[in-house]
Length: 153
Image 1 (cartoon, rainbow, N blue to C red):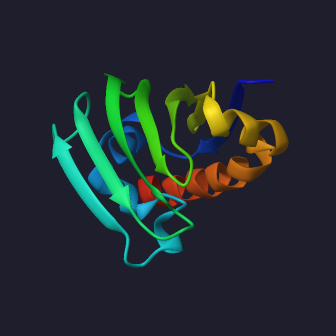
Image 2 (cartoon, rainbow, N blue to C red):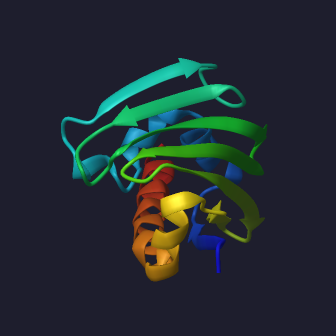
Image 3 (cartoon, helix red, strand yellow):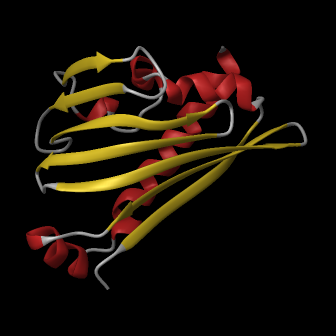
C-alpha cells in the first residue's frame, strides 16, 4: 500500500468557463482554498506565468500548512488542470493533483484528485495514516468555497 489517491467531486451551479479561472490562477486561490484560514500570516510567492501552464505558487506557514510549491503543468481550457504539488514541510513529497470540469445540466461537476507514491519517511507515514480521511474533508471544504467564489463572480 505505497500509493494513495484522494478524490472529491461536487456539483457547482456555474459553467466550467465561470469556475475554471478560479483554479487556473493561483492568485485566486485565496478566495476558496481550504487552507487559507489556517495561518493568517501565511507567506506566499507567485512566479512564472500569471495563469495556466507555468504559473507557480510557493507558500510557507505554520505547522498546520507547512511549506511547499505548486506549478500548473497542464491547462486545458474549462476542462482540466494538472498541478505538480510539492510539499517541503512537514513531510517532503510530490503529489500530482488534477482538477476536472464536466458540464452537467445546470452546472458543472468539479473533481479534485491528489495522488502520491510516497518515498522514505512519507511512505511509512502513509501506511499508518488514512490520507483520504485526512485530506478529503479539506477537499470538500475547498470545493464548497470554490462554488461560492464561482457563483459570486
